[in-house]
Image (cartoon, rainbow, N blue to C red; front, side):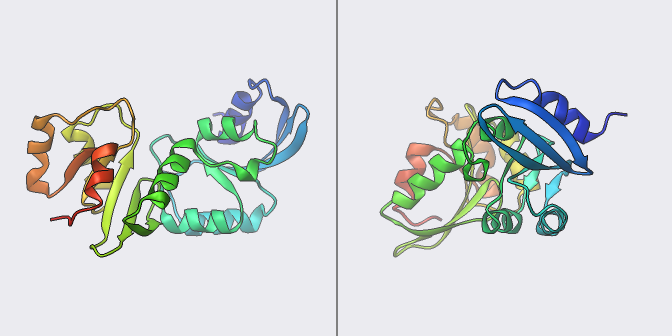
Length: 216
């Protein structure tokens, strides 16, 4: 059976910016880049990336610039994300790793969708602050109104099954939001199917407006 590290090496060697890649030890790769400094990458295959896993990996490999977790549907706990930010280690899946390796300093990489969402939340006049609870959910602290927890994804279309799966995997939230600019509305059948669950379903522009009102 091919190891996770060897599987990742094969894929990274296909990038035009990568001139060499080798397994240094379990969960650690060294990547040589054309005209850019070489970097070390931590590798994991976890369904849930929690803070204990992150701390253990950072203790073993304190020189990594990026933590790659292979499963596409993996969950990243907020405490794990916070530990990585404190250590100034970028993180994400394989597509994130591809993009990060093209940056001069891999540690500066932030997923484009995350950067977009957090920039808009920070600029919103009603939002006093926000906390990233995990890779999908944000708790927004609002001026003069109660906090709202939003599950935010870049879905082109939202289905009732998508929301039910999110509720099963990510605890509670008040609103499921698509930040995709090409998503122009939520089907009434989807919204109606989720009213009993107490979850609002919105596109991004409606969520921005909704932050100015009290959530019921």
